[in-house]
Amino acid sequence: MAELNLSSGKSGGRQTNKLPVRVDLTALVDLAFLLITFFMLTTTLARSRAMSLVMPDKSAGGMAVPESSTMTICLGKGQAMWYLGMADKPVIAPKVTAYGNDLNKAILELRKQVKATSGRDMMVIIKPSAHSVYNNLVSTIDELNITQTNRYAIVDIAAKDIALLKQKDIY
Image (cartoon, rainbow, N blue to C red):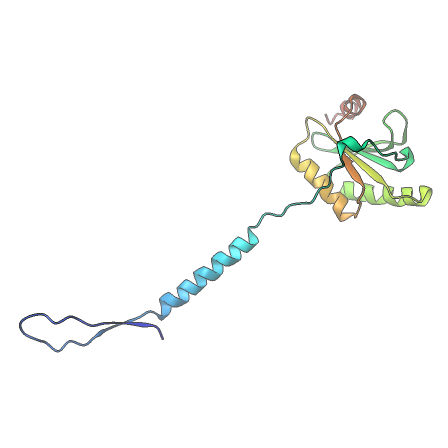
């Protein structure tokens, strides 16, 4: 039990028989340990979580990826547009989908299809537009991590893709 004993000093004159004052500090010690535990827990939970992203070296040149195994995701205003192949002549026509589960399903289905037809892993190209927000890009990369799609790149959006986004009314 924690306690603090205070004894009164002797004063001149008459001496009275005073009992020492006992202050019980048990509750304060308990409170101190609770506060320490609380702040240690909150600082552990409040640590920022960073996503690792490896970008290729710009001086190394590009790598050749077949069009039939390349999925392009263009990030629009509130939705994403994806297609397989190139914007000029896509293997699968551009489709508009919502971020989250719908994009997740599209990635999984297309990855299975590409693996079955070409036997290769699918490459995903992410093209954020000027009207997309940063959260859309993070959500898209999260979906790629959830679906365990390891081959993806973030590139600048082309004029052809902007025209497709305007055509789909999500630019």
